[in-house]
Structure formats: structure tokens, C-alpha cells
Image (cartoon, rainbow, N blue to C red):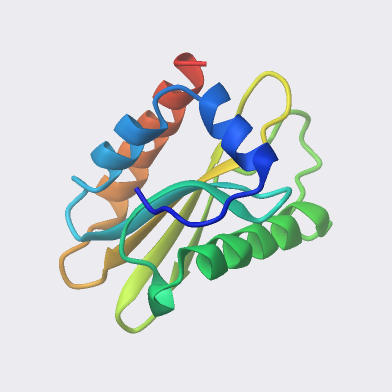
Length: 143
């Protein structure tokens, strides 16, 4: 897992979320996985990271992940009028990869997102989405 400075609140959050290390280890078994993280999208800080990050900067990737999630959840264009129809995931494609963001839905604050970066040639979106859904569900079940 990546080291470095973390705000006290993020360190405390990591200790409150059992299973983050296992979750990220499993995320890296997704075919084509290059890197993965769990991000507190209200603060933009990574709770835990593994593997590579775009531009080799997990902190910047976490901040970018938070910005994307906040933009999607705060704009009426992406907010459903159907009750309890919550955002599940976001997929960003580039020429060389896929960036998948899976919301971790909890009973109370739902402020975490699972981020996986896939190599486009070796990755499979359908497989990755299903595994990320299972991992997010397991992470919540561990709480």
C-alpha cells in the first residue's frame, strides 16, 4: 500500500473500514488491472492504494476521482428522478485504458469510491464491473 502523508481523518477512516487491503488485493486480480484505490470522495484523499497511478501520483488520482464523483453526483443531469436510484459507477475511457469508479453504498454516509485503472488491451469492462460490484458489496458487509 502506498505510504506518505495522510490527514488524521483519512487514517482514522481506514481503520474504520475493515477489508480495504483485501479489497484492493482482489481488485488487482481483475484482468488488466494496473492500479486500484479506495477514495474518500468528500475529501479527495486516498484511504488505501496499490499498484500504479496515472502520472505515478496516487494523491492526484484520488483528488481527480473525487472531483469526477462530486461533479456526477451534484449535477441534475446525472441525478435520477426515480427514488433510491443511486449512482453505481462511472467509466472513463482513454486510448490506452479504462478508469472505473464504483460507488461504495453504505447505510449511512456512502462517501467511498473504489477506483480501478485497467489496461485497455488486457482489460474487460464487463468482467471488471462485476468484480468491482462484488468487492464494493463485500467491503460494506465487512463494516
